Length: 345
Image 1 (tube, rainbow, N blue to C red):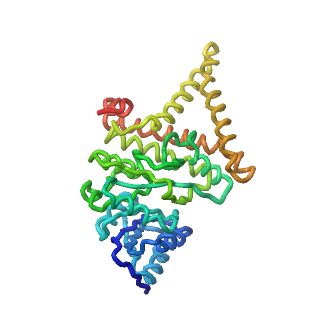
Image 2 (tube, helix red, strand yellow; image 1 turned 60 degrees about the vertical axis):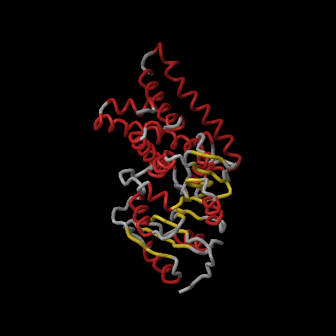
Image 3 (tube, rainbow, N blue to C red; image 1 turned 90 degrees about the vertical axis):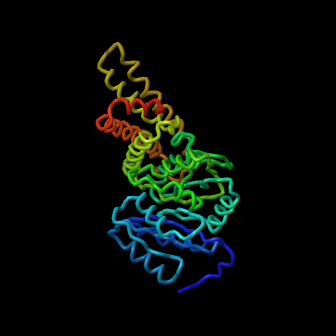
């Protein structure tokens, strides 16, 4: 068992919720344990993995006293975060994911920002990485403003105040003050939490020097499924906080609505040109965005997959949004739907 000279450094709790991450958890933990800030409590919360993830984490825990393995039978991320909150002993909280890695100065830089007392939370660039052709197309789409709009953490290059940070770092006291994460939010719980941070009057800082290498879906189909979940999760956030919506959250649902209306109008000869307009406009935008993104994508097959990656993101999100909005109408009535669409209570 190794021990480390931590000096007078504040204890930082690094939290890693995982489930079936045996292929990537070693790289993740290696990057966390290599931090220049050595005084760490590393809480890996396993959500009932069916692979070797718990055994691998246990190996690390046996070798390094900073690593602790916790269990979460509920499996979902917000429950895992709250399990970690109950065990956290640090002054500061830094989150990572089991399929992500961080550079050696990540924790030190995040803590330096938090220690100023100016910020309710801090985060950085979430840079998608992949090994497959389709995965590289997905990564490029995630790094494109056409793909994610003004979601700064995907492509920002300057420090700024933002509405959301990925894998945020926070004072543990602030997290406890807010009661942790909403366990009814299976997805989008991080944005919902950040919104509650901002409601207290605290700002969130984006620092592009805080870079996270995040392994993204390796297939277009998996990417579409992921963004369908994200679209559904956003509706649940808006149900709780209608005023938290940003323009970017409504663009994909508007696109899907326009395409559906166009399909319905196609049989009417007099309206056919109008019906085809949203398809033509989106196809032109896809072509232009794919051409720009192709400059930073390696491999012909990956470049050819770019239009499908963009479409999977937009149509997946938009379809998931409308799907969950239908459920809201069923469970809460038309007034709740109107509040979500209007963006106010």
